[in-house]
Structure formats: structure tokens, C-alpha cells
Image (cartoon, rainbow, N blue to C red):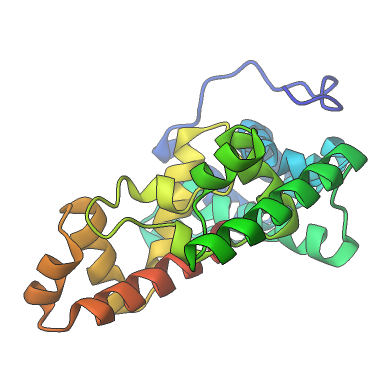
Length: 253
């Protein structure tokens, strides 16, 4: 558990079944405050999982937890079981959106002196390598140049520039897992939250972007193979892929 949240206590109760959630949602729509409180209290761990993802951005995790709980309340009030999705699937983007707005509006980002100094090293190395290579260096290349770990480089660049350069994101031949390509340097505490957030973000892409990412990352096709399958050029595939990855990063940071 993050420092600053040691005092948070969760009810020692099992997760709600889908049927129990539907029943509570119906009671909430009827104005039952007790049902609202129960649905929220039984999903506080979901808030904690999401707050853990943003913990490096704020000096006050408890404040983020309260903001996340506000998002959870909004989700409880608006959830409609007839939509055909689980409550957690509906609640995650609502909670994340509330936290993002809070961070954006308050500028509550923790950037310490050591991180600023590290950022200067990373940026200087990046400029040297870019001049030498004639392209944007990868995280691994910057790590080698600075003597930092890949994780430290990613964390540093994430703190000062949420969306990483697309040129470092993808290998044309072997793209790797999609989750790795949109990683932000922060880790989700809960795989379920990560999966839901990614699924929600994918729905916001246009059809061509979704098609390219599916063929590249799920079917593991090379860009030239994707181009052949879709009847477009390889440069077009590359452009669509990079745009789609940028949009996913923006949705998830």
C-alpha cells in the first residue's frame, strides 16, 4: 500500500456477484442511499488499484484516493446494468478521468530535485544521441548512455513528458506486446484495471487504427504483411500505427 494510505481500511467482504451489483444498481436508481454506500464500499480496492498507477505523479496519495472515491460515487450513480458491461468495466474510466482532471487542474505533480537532475542528464544524452544517430534514440540507448536503468529513464521522461516519442516505441519487424508499447513508466497495481483501461482506450480509436493494431500486436504481423492485408502501403501502416499508439498513451496517462 502507498505511503499516506496506511489508514485506509477495506471491508472484509467478498467481491459482489454480477447479480448483487444489478440489485444494488436498481436500488440506487430508486434513491436507496444504503445501496449506494454498499456498492461504493465494496469497490474501494478498485480505487486503490487506480490510485497506485498515479502515485508517482502526486505528493498526496490520500488526496488522490479521495478524488478516486468521488469518481467511484459518480460511477455508482450513473451505472446502468442494461448496458451489458460489468460495474468495474464502467467504473475504471470514470475514476481515472476524475483523477486525471484533478491532476491537470491542480498541477499536483511531484517532481523532486533528484528527478529534475536526472531529467537533465536524460535530455542531454537524448540530444547527443539524436545528433549522432539522426533519429530519436530508444529508451535502452539513452539508458546505456547515461548509466541509468531503462526503468529510471522511462520514469524520468514520463514525469516531464507523458507521451513518449513514437520513434522509440515500435520495431517494424517485432512489435512485442501492445501493453509494452503504451507503457508509461508507471505500473498498474491490478491487472484487471490495466485490461479494462486498455479495452476502453481501444474503443476510442478509429476502425483503421484498431485494424492495424490488431494485426500488428495480436496477430503479430510485420508492417509489410499488414500493408498487404489491408491494401495500403507500408509507410501508411507505420503512420497509422504510430498515431494509434500515441492516442492510446494519451488515453492511459
